[in-house]
Amino acid sequence: MPNISTLQFLALLTISNVFMNLAWYGHLKFKGSPLWLAIVASWGLAFLEYCFMVPANRIGSGVMSVTQMKIVQECITLVVFTVVAWLMFGEQIKWNTVAAYACLVGAVGFAFWGKA
Image (cartoon, rainbow, N blue to C red; front, side, top):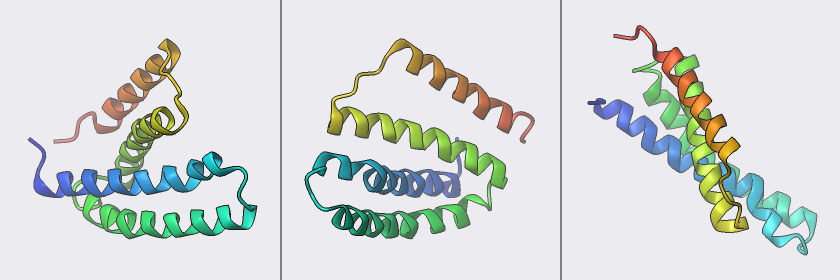
């Protein structure tokens, strides 16, 4: 069972990634709006992302290495991205996406191999 710090890290990181994905891709739903507005809105969302990412990394660094945190972050990013892509853009998950995600799960396993 993960300790409370690990759970806090994962929760904050997930929230952070929701804001990150909305900042990076959300403006694509509003291609008719001015570019400057998309940039300003994205920066606002990125600020919120950092409000969750910085504490997540501070907490996470107490329970895992920086490399392990980055690998976990990338996996969470892809899961959150998949949900955002499906909800906002109607993208469907295909077999090759599932295969790629399985490889990432393997990468997480290797990153944590041997950790007590």
